Amino acid sequence: MIIDARQLPADFRLEADIAIIGAGPAGITLAHELMGSGLTVLLLEAGGKSPETTRLDSYHGDVLDLGRHPPISLYRVRGLGGTSTRWGGRCIPFDPIDLEARPHIRYSGWPLDYDELKPWYGRAMAYCEAGPFRFRAAEALGTSCDPMVPNLAGDDVAADALERFSPPTDFGKRYRRAFARSNEVALVLSANCTGLTMAPNGQGVEGLNFASDPDHRFTVKATRYVLAAGALETARLMLAAKAGNDLVGRFYMCHIEGKAAVAHFKPGTKVAFQYERDSDGIYVRRHFSIPAEIQRKRALTNVIMRFEPPVIADPCHGDPVLSAMWLSRTFLKPEYERKMASFGYRGTEAGGRRTLIAHHVRNVALGAPSLARFGMDWTFRHVLAARKLPYVAVRGKNGAFTLDYNAEQVPNPHSRVTLGGENDGYGLPRLVVDWRACAQDIDSIVAAHALLAEQLEASGNGTLEVDESAIREGYNATGGHHIGTARMAGDAGSGVVDRHCRVFGVDNLFVTGSAVFATSSYANPTLTLVALAARLAEHLRTTAETAIPEVAGMVEAAE
Image 1 (cartoon, one colour):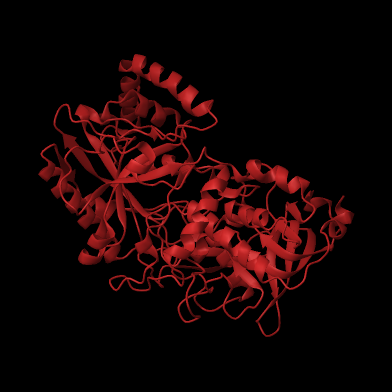
Image 2 (spheres, one colour; image 1 turned 90 degrees about the horizontal axis):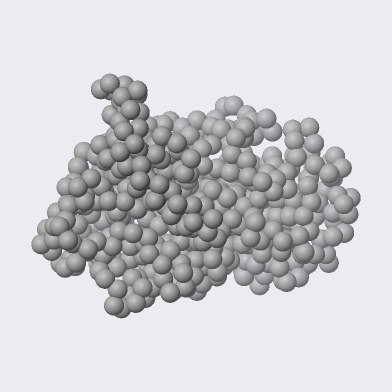
């Protein structure tokens, strides 16, 4: 059943066994997994069937360091499907070491081990339509596949790890029909949560307050409540309600990313830098990684490096495709558009913007035939294809290959989100983001590049030119990866939720999504948060005490 909260009578009350706030990948997975459980579920989404990324007054807030962290409204989406309506589809699981308590990383360690999480990755792969759980080149591409780089000598850097790609799946479009047919799950759109009503002793949630617009309010009553609204919005709701302990909003992490290296190979060296397809037709791509034993030995965080296009804004790359992208920006998701101005290029000083544009136009004019071929290929493999070619893969000038990095961030209690002094149109305080990286984060990235440089040179096939200053001065927080604001831990002194995602000290409040990650890994969060949402669904099923017969009777007035 799907209803629009704008059609509910004023001050109406909806009731169910479980109320889930947020219909992004986490909330949709959780609600979908609860179908057939005998429990009635309300899945409440602030937006409508179509995504909204503009005029989102509620999502604006203050960022103390806009040079490192983008505005918090930039990557958040209100609407059915949440950020899955905008993601690029990259699916990567955490590594086992990411869940370990590592002596060299303070505050590391999850209250569940990898063997407990891994079975749920199978469910997550299905939800994301990312194919089998195969994240090594030999598994996905066959044992006879060419190496990423020939003769890469040494054990400090591996080159057989893969990232897999969803079509990408828009969770709203993919699973909306199932909700429309369900008599147990009611998907309620245009439902902006304006607050949690806590019990006087703070040990339970008594209800939720919602508004379809600032003047049209309603309430929700459930036995158990789940916040699946993203790490930022979840923290805001909890902080405003004083739900949970004083660690809510702390340990805020993003992945650290940047471009700082260029690889040069001998002529004729075959390098696997393109997107490839496995036997199931799934796009995959390889990357360099640091094995767990080397991370432990050298006290490193988890860092990967992969071949990416050169800095698009710099016309010196000479590539007509990249220049056309810079000029038009029509192919770019917000994350990639921000990267054009973020990584290593600030070259508008000499000659100004007109000169910059002229150089890009020249690249396009000189490379018009190859640009036309690319346009046709891109149209068939990305625009028209159901399973889309994820992004552009090109060599740099003179056969050089630019590398970017994605790195784990050390959990830091001083990196946090708090409430500001200004309220939005619904009366909720706006967020203030104080994102901080630390020396260990940056030192690990520098060390990972040094290890790769050593192995490339030892291979005899190439060298890696590393700009250490670009790492130390040019790193950024990945804009759409908000992590850790309600972290999972073994006790309330170390985190906000327990191993089953229940908020410490609040009997009927749960959190799912990347907010509960105790550490960030380097991996994009979607696959893991979907796995955790499916795991939480099983816990809610097996611990249910009562069930309201059917949700239809609770929303009769909305029909």
